[in-house]
Length: 377
Image (cartoon, rainbow, N blue to C red; front, side, top):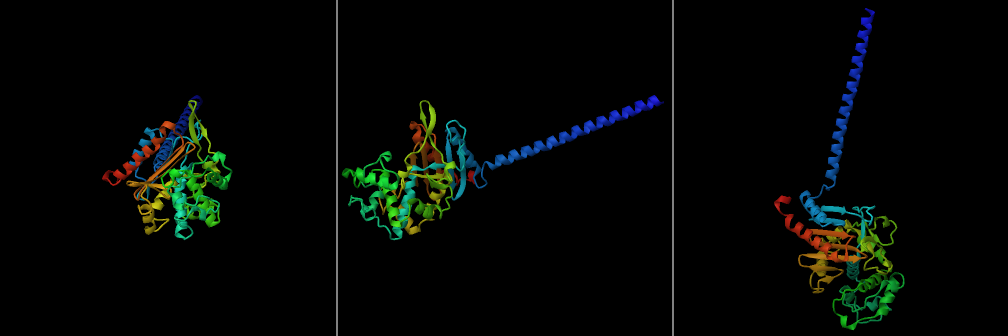
């Protein structure tokens, strides 16, 4: 009887242990299932968050496919009727792929800087501090070429010779001194011959008229009022971690091409901006955030000039264009009242330089043509 009780008790204990193990297994399974569902939910949320809420997802995906098909390495920003369609980074900032590009990446915008300078000149003109028909000498007293006007600088019709930054002294004053020394080619006076020197001189005009450094004037009159918080100069320590260095293809490999002598390019090419800030600047300009409708008409019409280039940007059929290529960084923006597209690229072989703008053109036309269609509503 005692033996039977012991066996019975042992059986009870075995059954109890089995039930505990089974319960634990079920509990672990339930927790694992819950965790699986939670992970799936997180992944779903993350996937959804890759496309901003304000975008048109269909257009976003189509542009994304175009960029990936073209092995695009850089940043893209797209607006349609003031709504953000896309703000995305693709690829790497470093040749060894150790550092990725981000939405905050800031590019050397090169000659797109000239449009910023053009806006400052127009503001000073409206304030009565500059007359574009005045000789440059009125604003830069040691400038010896008395026939060259402010307007000639704005339109690249001065005939001034190009300069090599490495041969100039430091800073804006060093650049101006070298530009004056290099002189004028009389055959080019009155003709459109694109030269950085024209807008470098305009930066000096701005400084002399305002009695402030060019960078302070730009910050106070464009960056701040337009809330361009990811825009600054080459030597701004607060932004340096965001600066993108151009990459060049040399000896069958990609290497850094660090920008040099940027202190000699005030007014013409030493500003860094994020793709979003470039797009926001263009969009706010074309919608009259800097100037009233009458002034905008003056800037955009052929009354000021019949040539495409004016105030640092180009007037094209159906859109406006600003572009800079400097130290293997390409920055292009096309815009009109409905569409803004910005492409910044830091990785182009010499034979591929035109590809960036060609790709931008396709994106611009696609957005302009399709966004009104029902399928994209």
